[in-house]
Image (tube, rainbow, N blue to C red; front, side, top):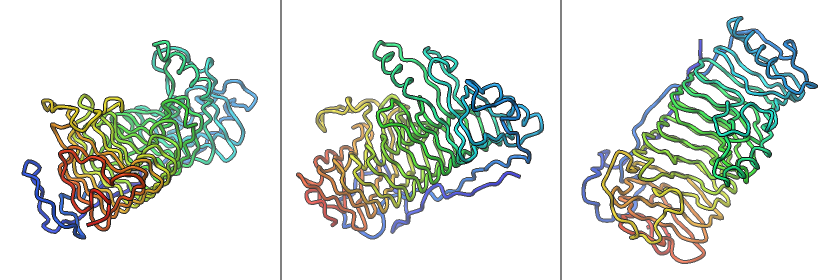
Length: 449
């Protein structure tokens, strides 16, 4: 039977009155900080993530013709997968050594094990099927439409991305960017686990958990591509019931990006290096019950990052980020409803309210707890569109040290509690608080109050 893991998808923070805040009511006058949030807490919820159980039996790719001396092992590897499937399932083993391979597709009830010392090396740009064109290119490992599948082991997938990055940059400048493959990609799959492996130098994204997936676990993986590699997201999520644990991610774009319909996602024990941060967006509709706990950021562009705009968003709610350490992260808290960055108004009053539509950003009920950030460039950005302010932000024991202060525009209730403070080396702790209500912190000194 498949294993099922019950996960806390949101942390319940009790408030003194235990009553819900009416978002349409007049903002209350500032009150002294207390030891409990004076705002609406996330709902206490659980969800289950099933993990695969692969049938017994192993299928070594060398038994099907794979060789470290071959220039293309695609057929041999796929034949091993097919044989495992015909047998009712089993584990396809990549032994120690380097094996060149093109795109492959796993089958139901089949695992792929990358043994210690093994490298599955992606065919080079120009040889990989579809390379150089603008039509979609198949992912290196496709799990689409499958159930009960696993990729595991301590081996490596080498993406040979450098030539892809150069070709992409050149073709994009010419107006027709080439398509590039994800290393692992899938839609409409369930009960999927990816564990232990290393993926490096990805041509495009490393792991793409696309739409209509359910019950996905990513654990103990290392994802590593240069900070200059274009669009090499670590993990992209568009799905429900996802656990991401104990991963180490450095890349050239979002370390993790949760997009529309990401619900009940738990991220724990992860380490983030270079990259654009732990992000929601830029497609950010129907995102809720995201729980992040015990993660470390070092040298990341952003820490907690939500990015979208009036044409790509909707409701984002019940987010909890706790027990996080950030070192030399430029923007530790960056929640901005203008995207891309060059659309951010030049002044707080530089944009006028627009009619509310189904894609208007509606961001609310966000808790940041036990977070320490040092060496930041700016303390943070909280900037909503004027027609729909952000609602109910709680900073609970959050301590930020930065060069410049925080921007908070159109924020309908940000509570700083339990000693939360902002320390800056230049100017005020808050550089702007336009049409915002902020309590529990001195807006000039950043001291708790």
